[in-house]
Image (tube, rainbow over all chains, first blue to last red):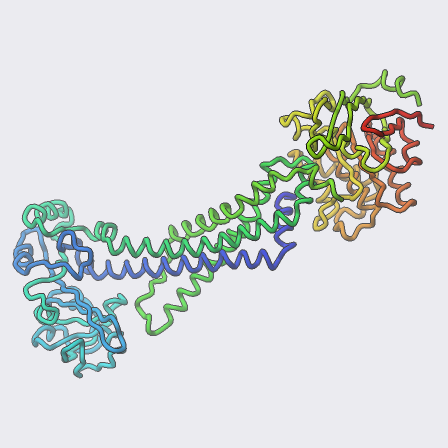
Length: 370
Length: 233
């Protein structure tokens, strides 16, 4: 109890310094949580697009980005005919930009695609999809930012399209996307006879391994991955995740430097007090534990405050209309745990030098000059 | 008092043999072969001019510093050994300094419990011991007061309580009344003598106050790096 009191007393003695240090950790943790959660959410959404009513994705082997993947129509047709396959839906991804919107995602789809079949049609009739080459269906948010109404015409890239429907989906990417017939998209993006991926639904999920083997044997330039496998191995996701943790880590490093500064000052301003503790029998370990204890309190309080701030910030972002559907505020417990542990480790690392310094204080020298 | 007779009947708890100590790479020799013994329960005053080595000797007795040569043992524990240092500071010696050296943000009680935390003493036992010492030093009513709220005399009495919490064999006091006015100094010293007598603790006290020194069992003069024993009244 007294030991804890010694820790708390010293933090309370320099309230502003302790507060700034705690705030440093809190904002670092909040930044890390926000960046990681947003990117995890984005990855989840993108995975959601691919795994819509399917278990397996087929795409071109060794492409760095699915936008560069080409799956020939002949292959799609053949795969769709395999007995183990319930349905195979080719999807062509493309990106266009307009003056106000640098990125508008376009999806080239067939009428049987789950996005068309299962979406909530706010306006329009899904059975009219793909009847004309210049027909498009817009996600609700895309309709908003393109200022397009049902049955109006809208400029997308270099062409004008007829809006035959408006969809509502829970997925931010899809909600901000433009859905066009596959043939139209192939022509628009100069990818005649190809799709970016084929999403596969099997009659029996247990045939997944056999399906993947068959793809490998039959099409050396294609690869089939189960959804979870794809999310784990897709290089773009790996880069995004690594970037998120790196950015968050840099924030935490700055917070750690704040803790280090506080702890150094904390030790330097009470050399005499530490000497007194030594004279009263405190061991090196007890002195170090006291210093680490202080930094642990700062780190844990900072981490908890950071989690709170980060969560509030994410919810606030979710309320921004322009970001509707893009922010997924599902904070994974594992991420929370990692963030807290990282904050704690940062605090401990920040207290390392001060603790070593404190352990080296010789009581006789500190007490000699009264 | 007959010192040698007293020592003959009592256990030697502090022994220094041919202790040398110098500073600045040997250019300032402070102690030049000090040999000394103190028996259990004795009160010993160390007198001498400033800089003669009184504090240095106390620091060596308490293991806070190491002699260049010679040896010190407390209750048959070799003081120079790093392995014994914690045991020495936790159980064998207590320190009282000229300045109280208490932690200002803690209460009197918390300050006194610090040595028991270091030694890992049971909290109930520590509380009982604190109550006992606080009663004896007249501080029972001040236990929950912060150090800033205490008078100079009360602070020094608190420092005395803290030094005795783990029932040390030896109390090393470096000018314990040096920062107090004459009246308070007398009161604190009376209490010091009373409490060490009751506890059976050996007191080694550095002081400039000849009047206080005369009231100890033994008076040791320090000059030229050596100890010379003087008869007390």
